[in-house]
Figure: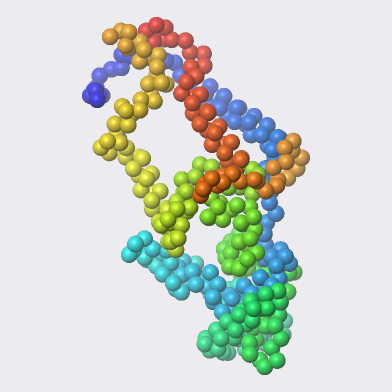
Length: 312
Length: 56
């Protein structure tokens, strides 16, 4: 490789370059393309999935999930940091990264997804059920909710289970009230305004929705948006998606990432490592000789290389 | 979605080969990216005519 002397003045060919003109042309071309393609193909406008639409479309799945939130057995309830301490969360080998970062968005699924929203109803029957739940110890609460969740799951399509022997305590009343609240649309509002009067934080309704046993995963699968369907790079409908994320998406399709509970942090770490390697190519042995072995730049500057050959 | 000439508001027919699954829309974008890269390499600079010595 030729040594480059930075102090030496450039004596090769020069070319006038109008940056403003190029930026203007690029802006106009991209603007015309955007307007033209939007007119030809329009854009995705999928109707938002809400707790209301979920409870109306799949009532049994909603009540099973709501009961699971009381039992703390849902994905959110068992997730670990940053929501709770039920698990260690994502870890990179022996390094427990999520646990190290701690619980930054504390979520108690029973309190945050069920009891607090129900408390806003000011319904005497519901309030009595909330009071009974709170008066019980954790073991009793867990027993009620777990048994009721199992009964609902076994019944498959039922939205409530008769409880003549008081086996489930206040859980059937709580779940039925939450189901009615969700159907009316009030639960979406209660969860988005529980921390702030401005509905800008959708963490709680999204976590609740993601706990859905079959409805929400079914919607994602139908649109090819799940992780094992290259969903990271797909879009709803038939529109092209984020095809540039193919490499991120690829790792989720192959082992050991595919079957790992820590796939997210493993994939992000690998991509970080690969990106760092890409940035540091000029300093990496063998890799820094790629332009010599595959001289693509010579195609771009072919005129200059041709003239240099002739001159020499 | 308002009126458009081509209706893409329906599930795509995904092309699957082994563990690879790609939508026709994404495939078109990937092919176009390669075509544009090839054109950027091979097409001369617009309005540029270098002399035999490569000097302007």
